[in-house]
Image 1 (spheres, rainbow, N blue to C red):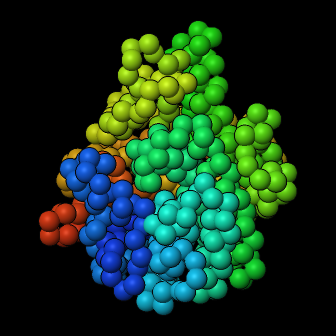
Image 2: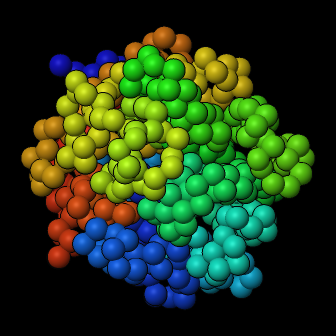
Length: 448
């Protein structure tokens, strides 16, 4: 059965990020990133995988843009690698690195595909991390300088900008529990990382506009948080998790306030003045949605919770029992299309008139089927139907980006998970469009 018709002008896109696809980590003057360092450490990434080659998009970008042109998407969301443009994170610009993104943007424009640029998708220059990383307030100002460099070069052709992607993941996984780069395990002492990223976002938004760029948003991770039971412990743990994941990064950007006074007091620096910068008005708001999370009070079993196959440290104030009653992806994530509608409704209920038009900046699934991936088709079909229901209810959603155009390096689980519409043979790097690629292409044609 054909999908219902989306509004005129609805944007259909695909997404990637630099470290997950580019490779060429030590070519043309690129400096090392925290993910180069982290993935080289024994036991940090499944199978010892790294992004050293990834899908070799750095050399094969024309082939990938041709695939996107065949797919018929309106927009391509990709990230610029901060260490490729500024190897030390600040100071001298690496012309060869910036030239690469200039060529990529030109190639996209020639193909009729609107470039949608993320400035930071977790690959901090290692020199910046050595100087304190996101625990250091100065990193926010270095990031704004980086935004100026990229905005001045690409701002005349880029259709959408996102200074940050999922700052929650960097704070929680990178600094609080240590299963992502840079591998710190600071628990709640990682909260300054959240504040400094949000400050960087506000400063970068202003820097981009000053450089002549426009149409700026953010890509935030959002999930329905479901208590495992109605016990006070589970309900309390869920409320805490919900606040840390859904509101900590949305409320300051959209309303200029932290969701609780307790969180505001935990943040460093002149918080009130910073919030004025953090809440610099956006043109749109991006939502990355994958699946709901079930939350419980911490168990007394002596082991920490597990996320994506990685055991988290003991002492977290919540546990994550499985979401039962739904099919799962091959990554073990529950497939809950209605959760997308629930997420959007939650944001409208909480932020109301503060919420600008929304784009789904990521949505997708990992299945190991090489080319005949009917389950991915069913996943996308179900989520797009749920999205259409949300739009019909009055929620202003203007586009959907599938994660991802190609199979890629999936962070701490390496190459074990495949999210792509295009299959990549990681030995030969050959690209083969999957059945879902053809489904998405045909669906876009039908919508038009």
